[in-house]
Image 1 (cartoon, rainbow, N blue to C red):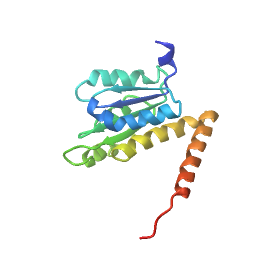
Image 2 (cartoon, helix red, strand yellow; image 1 turned 45 degrees about the vertical axis):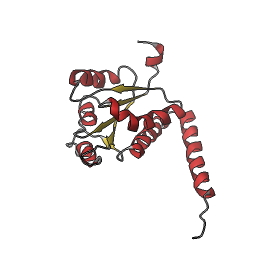
Image 3 (cartoon, one colour; image 1 turned 135 degrees about the horizontal axis):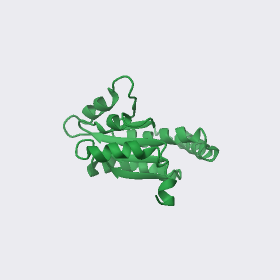
Image 4 (tube, rainbow, N blue to C red; image 1 turned 45 degrees about the horizontal axis):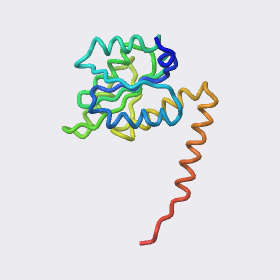
Length: 167
């Protein structure tokens, strides 16, 4: 294992390469905060053995959180959560058939005992999954907590500076 992979804290996985358009938003925020992470395509349906290996090896490789995005049947987050005790944050990717509602329901309706923290459909969900992962990591990392505090202060300042023109 390389020194770079030993420092990884978050795994960002998705069911197919087409999910990257959504999941890249999680990766971008993790990068902005300086959180070491990896991004992989790990399909629950097309690569079940690889998915199993990924989930079971994650903790031993130093990962602390897994963000899993999937569309359609969206089994990836739940199947990964069944194979690890690490927190798994599920991002429903918007699908063509049902606009992501199918993905959302597949991820959020986990049986008792196999939790998946489920976020919003699409880009907002990917961003919030990254921010939730950062919040979890920040509970034991003061420098990361400071970055998160500054991020929230910046969001507040931007909203307070907005002005509406009368119509």
